[in-house]
Image (cartoon, rainbow, N blue to C red; front, side):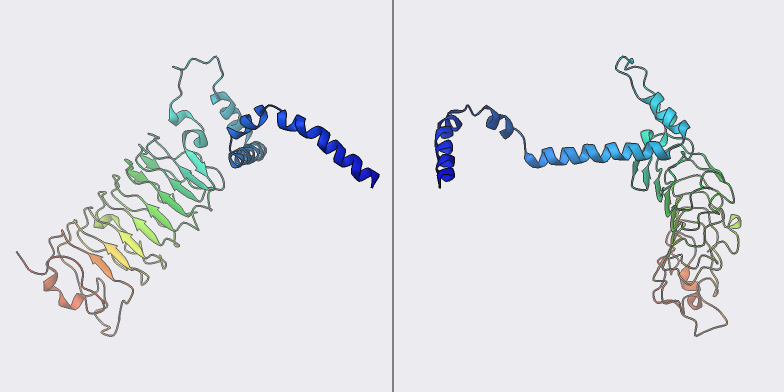
Length: 295
């Protein structure tokens, strides 16, 4: 009982001092949001840990390069380094297995982190793809090189990409198609200069997962042969295709053959008159887009 009385007396004696204390500390804290402070601490801890892990994993050459490009306080601002000379994840953006190098004016495929699964290097100045560019990246699932000036691709440039599912080479200057990985589900080569004679007869035959094939705005004079059964969409508009056969999409010797998956064929913008080939579509669910009558 005596201890309780002493405690209450202490509270009563201290209460005036607490009430009369200046609200400086409270006002100072009211300028901040507790959640923002907490998130900021987490952000700092995360990147401090990430930097430690990265420093342990990266080759010494890359670490040295990063140190070399880190600006010192007394550096002249005018001594800016071109993006093409920077290590990949300084010139580009690297996020959880994705590398974004868009509109950075790079002229070749940059060195990639080992865990890269998605590469977006659109609208640059890349001229050639070599066999070494993707030789050590079996983790790649998507490559998008749209809008470069690629004229040449080594035949085996994509050979080791066993997990590659999507490849876009649209809006370049290609005249032929290299060997493609067998797991591709989507291949886009729209707006190039590809000719039919430069496409091998079995270029797409082994691509048993290919669902989307885009070859519009090229210089094709025929539909590619041996299209896989998995195909759902094929775009061939605005080429130089003048004719098709009963075997182009169907099988002339098998009237029961059907292609239930192929539900979009674009052939508009070609000189071919599709109405002349009624037996070419007997296996399809829908008719191709294009001209059926001569204008």
